[in-house]
Each structure stands twice: as structure tokens, then as C-alpha cells.
Length: 538
Image 1 (cartoon, one colour):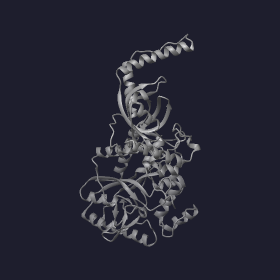
Image 2 (cartoon, helix red, strand yellow; image 1 turned 60 degrees about the vertical axis):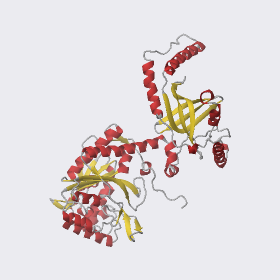
Image 3 (cartoon, one colour; image 1 turned 180 degrees about the vertical axis):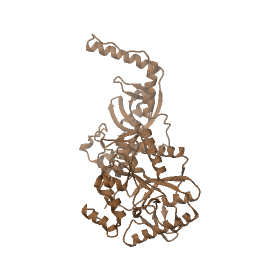
Image 4 (cartoon, one colour; image 1 turned 30 degrees about the horizontal axis):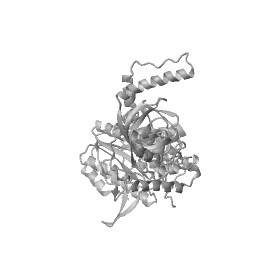
């Protein structure tokens, strides 16, 4: 746990407060000497560390093409060392004659002082690189200042790239500029930051110490970029809709509530993007989508966070079959673009997104995994009797449709590892969905399951305002009966439907869960930069 080469005792034997005091004293000395790093406003960063390595390797291959390694066969140890050293010096002379001059900037993660020369490691967005710092190259005063630097300080480095005798591509510094003074002590580099609570609360430290975390969020950004590219190729238009709403509808969830002082009105944070996006379909925007935060007043677990990112899209003149094609194509596209293959691994299990996704009705899935045929069940009482026999808990207000869903959650979800479309849900649990023409007890809806998770939810959207009003009335009744997650009648949305909405397919994707799948992350907090955490003083 020692923070070495600070000119003091190892960190493990000192009081942390003393270390912090020393760092502040160093800053005060710099400021008194007119070298306040916080007065620097910019730095000319020409390259990242990975660029330096790539450029050097390309340059080296070109200048040293055809040169072979020295032959030391038959030589004793001393003679072999002399031959290798001579070869290194010749190579170095050739490379230094046409130097690659760079200017990098980043955080110092390691430092080793050796008299008139030192080594340090500078880490930036794209990696890290060793820097050779000598008194002769940067000057006596600058070198003295550098020797007083601390792990965590941010430096600008100007110099040229070379390869050390041990083969490590490094930068020979000709100028070292302290750009920011670190006043806190970073976790010891070898062990890193492993405490998950601290990682989530201090994500900035996690990103510094754990390259794996940084790569997850870089990949998350790429996933969002490729989603937008995919939808742009299909002529979808990205839009933004309100987050503060008077009626939080579009999903079965309890909303967060707040008060709008200026209008003296109670408002809610949205739980879905659906109802406003459908208004835009009514308005003639035929293909729209939104990627945005939604808020659900629920608990936290490995797959749920009360604030999360949802994407919903709506396309006029198609149905849930069209949404299945879009979804399957998009998942395959993302896997190829982000992971390099349609076969991905999650927690050691291979998931094949390249094959056609399996399709099962919800009733067929229950028949397959629970041995119960709900197509043969006619009444709510029969359904409840089956629930009792299979130890399924339900509420008295629940209907057959609710019981079907409870059976599916209990017996089926855990078996759906490979991508599977679960279709044709009960009407009772789908208040915004078109009924199936040949069976009005079911709706044209699907959920995609993968890795046992629900990945998205899609409908042939209900566009009949009379039917929709009746469904809302039933939801109002459910709310009155104690269902905190029931929908409520939205008169403006009903008015939009009365204006006329074309046949439409719509779908919602949990972006965080998708990122978990494509980055092999075990918890939703691992893919949220700042997950919801209980206040540390409670």
C-alpha cells in the first residue's frame, strides 16, 4: 500500500491527513514561487499515448526494414551484452535522426526517481506510456520541481518517442509542465479500487484506477452512436419530449412526484416516452425515436435503477411484426459493430445473435416450461385455482390475464437464454396495445428475452380512441383498487387519437440492460456512471 518516492515514509506507515497536508504545502510553495498549476488554462496536446506507440512502431518498421537481430551465438555473457548494446545504439541513432515529436497530457500514475534521471508513467484517455525525465534534458530547476511531484498530478509532456533497451516504447521528455496538482491520495495502484460502494460513489476515481470500468463507458457511448447510425439509415428522426408531466403514463410503474412552484401544480417525472411520441405520429412525423432518462419510484437491484435510460421508437404503417424485424436486425448490427461478432459471451455463456430469434407465444412458453395450457382455461376462477396449485401468489383483483403473466415470470423467464420473442400477451396486462383480430383476449405485443432478461417491449399500437378510453377506465379502476402502477386516463392523448393516428408499430428498449449484455457487466450500476446511492450520512 506504499506511495513510494514521495520523499517521505511509505504511505502505509503515515497518517493520511499528514500526506494530504504535505500535498497542500507543495501547492502553496508552487504558488509562492509563481508556478501555480491552476493558473494554466490550456495545453497543446498533439497526441494520445496510444498514438505515440502506433506512430513509433510504423516509423520503426519503415526505417529499420530488413535489419535483423544481432547474432550472439557462441559469445559469452559480456560479449553478447556488448553486441546487443551496440545494435541498440545503432538502431537508436537511426530513429533519433528522424524523431517523432509529441506533446501528451495526462495523469501521473507511477514515478521512480534515480538521481539525475527518473521514469514516470502518464495515463490518458487511450492508455499509458512511460516517460524518461532527465535533469540534462528539462533543466535543473524543472527537474527539482518534478522530483517533488505526487502520484495523481496531471502533467503535460513534450518530447520525442524512443524505445528503451528493454524494448518499451517511451517518451524522452524535453519539457514537463505541471497542469494540475492532485491534493488527494489515489488508491494504491497494484490493488486498485476494488470496493464497489466506493467505485460507484466516486466514479471519477474508479475511472482513473480501473481500465475495465473506463472501457465499459467508452463502449456504452459507441453503442448509443451505433443505435443512432442504424436508425438514421432507416430514416428515423430523433426527438425530445417532456420529462416533467402532469400524467405519467405509458408503463406500469409508480412515478416520482414533485411540485411546480411557478404554476402551483403537482407534476410527475416521466416513467415512459410513449404517449408523447405517439402524439408526434399523429402529427405526421412517421418515424420518431427518443433516447432519454425515465424515472420509476422502485427498488434497486442488479438490473433496476430508479433513474435509467430508455429508448422508444414509433413507426407509422407497420405493426409488431415490423418491430420484430427491426429489433432482430438492430441487435445483430450492434453486436457486430461493438463486439466484432454476432456471437457474444455473457458470464461465460455464449449467446448467438446471428441466428433467427426464436418466436413463442406467451401461452406456448408456459405450456413448454410449466406444463399448463392457458388456452384451455376459460375463467378467472380456473386460472386462480391453477395458481394455487402451482404456489403462485396473486391478488384478489387479478384476472386470468394477470395470472398468465405471473406464470410466465415464475416458470419461463429463467429459461430464455438465447434471444426469444415472446408474443401475444393477455389483453389485461396490455392497455395500449391492439387486440389480435382472431382472439380479442390477446394483443399484438412481444417482449424480447435474452440472457433471461426482458430486453424490449413492443406493440401494434392501439389507435382506436374509443377502445383506448375503455382501457384507461379499467386502469383507473385498478388504481382505485390499490394498484400503484396502473395507468390513468390521459385526455389530451385521447384527443390526439381522435384526431387520428395511423396504424403504428412501437417499441421500448432498456438501454442500460442492453449495455450490460454487450459489455458482459454483472450489474446495472456497472454501466451507469453515477448510479442511485443511499446518502452516505443516512
